Length: 399
Image (cartoon, rainbow, N blue to C red):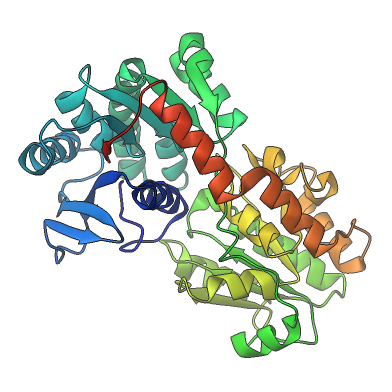
């Protein structure tokens, strides 16, 4: 794992963590390896039913080759010291850790790699809007990591992707053989955690949200590819048309001050609330209390787990047609997708929702569809069976 979910919550870390815990509860011995960005965690501990290995995060720039080698070297050293070769399966969720694991176990045990997003596209998207030195650095890093990704994919016994979109991108970047070998197994939702709540007005009050206007909610890292600037421009148009609303933006990131300033400049003070980091214990209530969840991504959405979490809470999800989003949300309602990623299209979608002209679906029906296709138990069973192949697992070593 690039991050251990309880240390640093994120969608990709959640998926890796859920799989590890699922395997441990099924009686397998599971080891995970991750970096420690805090510098305060022990090198080894037994936590959440898992053997957790952590090493200090390397302090090199993202495009510095020494950063790549540091992840690989520390991964290899920790596994050799604590795990040895009593391993039946390696399942990678993070490229540089996985490459280090392959240097130790490749060709000796069954290996599976789950691609959360193609690394080259992810890094190029990260550089959008950055200053020239950072953009150039990320281009170099993207090239180096792309080569590593290709090598890891070639050496893997099993490759999975979370969407048809990601599978197609892997084919475009690494060739048709990789595309043919990749199996699509979607992400999943913990239905015990994300639920419909009956008294949404009371939940709004508890969260400090207004009860007299529709409340939109979005949860994003505040970086350019998430489209939050376009969302704010779109909401200015909605406001100018006389529509009332309140937007809650959860999450942090490098654009927070810039976006807060933009919201004020657009006359949205009092209409938009930047909450910063959203604690895990109140996130389900925020999904469930919102009148609609918004996903305004402009680039690189390889699955969209947060959309499914909102749908599991019975809420409509208003989205842009980017990456894998049409695959996920289109299963529920095609008219919840904007025409494109433009400010105009986002504005029209939100206005149509506020005017009540978009299709409305019963919350229970939305949740039942999530359960049918994306329940944690169903999808994890499929993922683990695919990763195992024809072999049985007595223990699982990996990252």
